[in-house]
Length: 548
Ligand code: G6Q
Image (cartoon, rainbow, N blue to C red; front, side, top):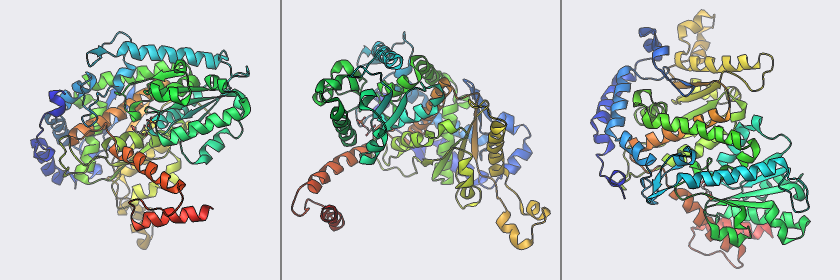
């Protein structure tokens, strides 16, 4: 294992920049954004950064030049530069699983060289991409036929977590570019309703399943895959039909074969691709079938451009580094518990759900790389909804509640569906929200509107509520790739500062083991015993009695 991955680190709270930030926070916490903007008329143009067509306005954050200077120092003192190099060069920085972390290799151009255990992985990546493209073209053109000779009209991805959220988010985000005479669905939940509703109006003869599972042992996915097999064979009535209606995406050739899928219909990936970082691997097969290989490659190019930006740009101009540092600033100094992600783009409706896994599975950790319990908050809770819907529900709390919730506003200059003045209204809303959160409305302003005294406190908006605004030109496959990569590297930046392993997920593994144990008891006869507490035992027994 490399020196970088295991080096003994100075505890975060002992770093000089951290201590300086603590002192600095005391001076900044009482400075209102109104005052910061008033004292620097150029603030709204100065505290911005632009890269790869993404305009990032971070002027509405509770920071000064001094805050930024100290946060950038914190990045240096935390070894962010070295850690970035370690990740990109294939060092085993996922120390608890002893794995390299190379989702960036999935979007590296053909000639690149990235070695894992002395072997260049880029040719393999492109070999799989080429096979995916060939398969996608055949399905999209109708050359790939179902068992009875009918054309495939429906594609269902079966997977969960990292093998579902990326594909479903990307499909929804890029629906505009998708093949419209085909239906794409995603089954993840072991709740039979998910499968039943996804297939109720479909014809087995025209339906292809992509079973996506890195391990090919996940209970939910295997249960849904088996049900899909039964559902298909009920009509197709011949085991040989499986080869025409099932393909697998996995790293586990043995289990794929055991399930009955020919390895000729398997698309592989590697243990250095984490589930939540896998949408660019073969896990993205449903995306590629939906939007075609060219659009998929454009998305990969978008990812790669931000990879290069993150790897080479000084932190002061580095979008993901700045985003990550700001997240640390609010989580650890202001005590902000959450971050709201608010895309003003309907196609990004699943983006907050996707980000929840990316951010919270990565940085929901309570011990450092060396196993010490942290004495500072780590990953905040990410949540959100597309604008403007959120405005008519939870924004109230962001504006006037007692909590500080930094917001990420995401908007696009051009719409993919021009309809009258809808888009101007949409953009007017996003700009207005950022402004209102930052500047609020003073009692004097409320009074001047003729509000009676007793009502004034209710109508006052304190303001001073921070937000970032991201403005992109248009939601293209490339733009989607850039957006996701921004957050991936922001999450990485946060993890480096917090000195945690952002790439394992022992909490998820625990759930997988626990459920299996109880299933045996639920399906058995006689009283549930096992080693449960009295509450769990009673619940199991009650369920068994009532379902009879
Ligand atoms: C992601 C997690 C987790 C995983 C799912 C599905 O980083 O590891 O969400 O993706 O549990 O796992 P399989 O792909 O192995 O079925």
